[in-house]
Image 1 (cartoon, rainbow, N blue to C red):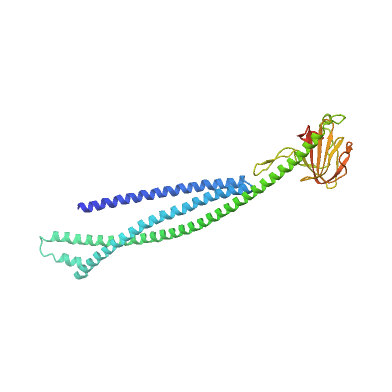
Image 2: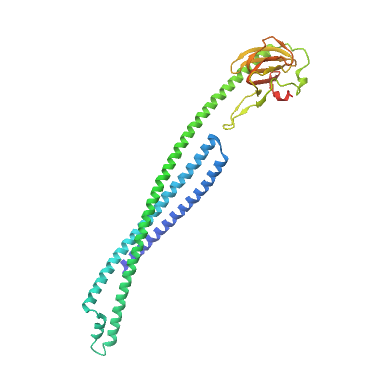
Length: 369
């Protein structure tokens, strides 16, 4: 008796542990699904807000995180289904043993009734020989009838429960197969996303290297131009006669007809936030348009210059320099003294234009009308 009680206690303890583990697993699955919902909202936000290669890379990173959670969901759900399957298999095994035992009991009881014939219970009743045995006999017959009925009911109920549990078992097996398939598919999608991330990172690195090269080239180009102007400024020790150009700030004509495509000031790359110097204006103009001197002065330089094409630099009264670069051709030479509006050359498709006061770059837009 004590042994049976101990076994029952152990079984109850194990059952409680299994229930606790299942509850913990279900809570874990619910937490994963909440995280999936959060990441899906974040991914939608990133898709709306981000653009370009960096935006695409950010989207991929969030998509990877989301897909990792989906893989976790499939693995956790599969584990939960497997644990449930193990419990169902144990229940089915117990029911099969119980059903077999009931089947044997019922078989033996039917064999006893068969030996008594069709009117088995009636024959038992008629076998009572004395008045004194009547009441105990009736009770005995009643007990046997109830016991046989309970045995039959128990058998039918156990068989029905076994059938139900077997169907549940099949359903759980199908569920495991579905989660296994989902897990494989999600892992495959995760691997594709990781490969895409690696490709995007390689592209980003290549673009950054290209940008670094371009930035270095622009800086070198600007440095060489600055060196030229420093050299010309150093040689122009004699100020030019005439009214200082500063007196006409804001009323000078533009050197060529066109539109400003790049304003004065450092250029900021919108994707990488890097800056490159830009000390003048970039003007889009029709090819062959005349480029004119914006103020009288002397030509200090008139020749091709590396990175800028045909270039002219003028010195004006007030220690002001103007620079015209990117010309298709030149119509002036070094040492020429030009009047206001004199044609320096013809533009290609754009003109780079600078104004420097005491060799310090200033915004040309403030000097032109």
